[in-house]
Length: 250
Image 1 (tube, rainbow, N blue to C red):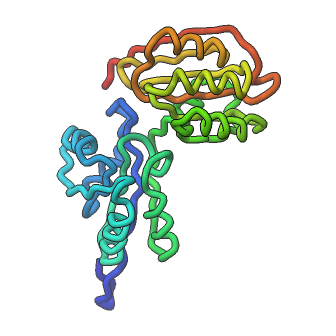
Image 2: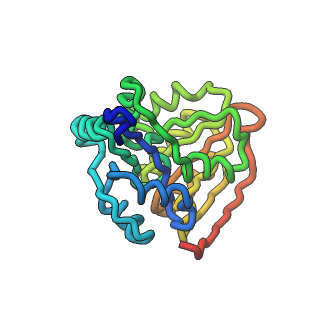
Image 3: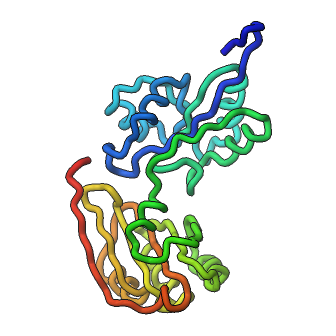
């Protein structure tokens, strides 16, 4: 972009949320932005290409992920300072929320470059909205450590927080994580939500003990969010309810 005096104006960084499963959750504004920017910084260009192809978007992609973030952030910053508009997207959901992008957004802020939010889907908010546990205050803890000792230490540091806590977890570690949560946090009310907005969406409700036993007896697949109630009355014991929802609009 060039101003009236012929000087190059800096571009903007658009932080664009994308669907966590159901393509129908793509907003008209996000489609418009992804079509109009000069390039898209994408966590996984293969996954993002499926979204772009579905909506007929031909904008060039730039790989931007944990392994190249330092170099890619410099490239994106140079492009923005040269007048280009760039969109930042993650594999799914809202960038920076347990996904790459913090270094880039922070650097833009430090340089006085404009950062624009294009809000939309977020697995944290989606799970919290259907959990039936106190929605505020809540704490998002992201992914817990892979190793049990470190995971239990992290859980212990969160045990006294007087709020609902939301975690992301891998299907390969969910059984071990729920076992550690039960032993460290006690038998609180909790919800395991997997494959949110997808065809095989499933919401499992109970106490941490009940959910831990369930995870030991069956394999949970897909993207998983765990919502754990706060200590005390609102996060205490409750009956088990199992709810399954099939979403056909994918």
